Image 1 (cartoon, one colour):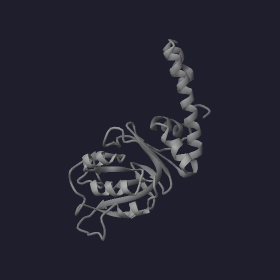
Image 2 (spheres, helix red, strand yellow):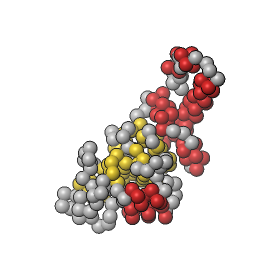
Image 3 (cartoon, one colour):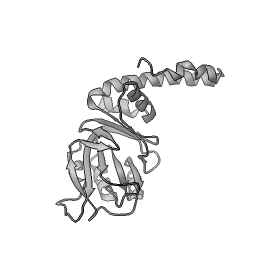
Image 4 (tube, helix red, strand yellow):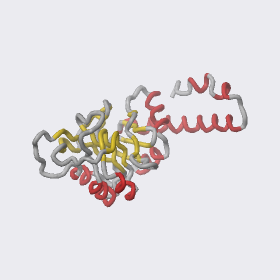
Amino acid sequence: MSELRERLAALDTCLISDALDSLGLAGAVAGVLPVWEGGRLAGRVVPMRTVPAEGRSAPRHLGTAALELAEPGDIVVVEQAEAGTVPVSATWGGLLALTASLREVGGIVVDGACRDVDEIRELRLPVSARAVVPFTARGRYIEDTVGEPIVFAGVPVNPGDWVAADASGVVFVPSARIGEVLDIAERLVAKERLMAEALRRGDAPSAVLGRNYEEMLDGE
């Protein structure tokens, strides 16, 4: 698993998205971005889902069960149901971030909001979210499921799937297809490296970025 994580971490989300495209797989998500510059992440998914509390109380704070389930290097992925364009609360904050850091969790991805960004930055914990707000989840959101399938921005995500996130967005890769996706993405890296070398030595852009570029996913 560590080898797969290292290979995934070496790729950017754009090339992983291209590899998914070549296989006809959905998995790329736009608009969920690092909350501090440089917060890249890659690893296996521990999914959880939060829902509006609507007057219900919870036996524990959301996120704690996912952190106890996660192995070092895993990524906690949060579906914040009905979050809307401006979520009414965060579903990740400073104490949860501290716990994640102490347990060597690889990062957090939230289809919703987080808070305590200054603390998260100081911890150097990679966190990607759709929004940042100051509002607590207490009394607003509760945990619904942990370690069960979720839907993240329309993408089905299962326990043990793979996720990567950087400044371009987030990509999910089904566990059963990770080797195939990595192989294709790595071949695309090699192709783009050759094109970059050609541009640097002065080859015409129209030649370098011609038909071969437009069709570089064909046959992958």
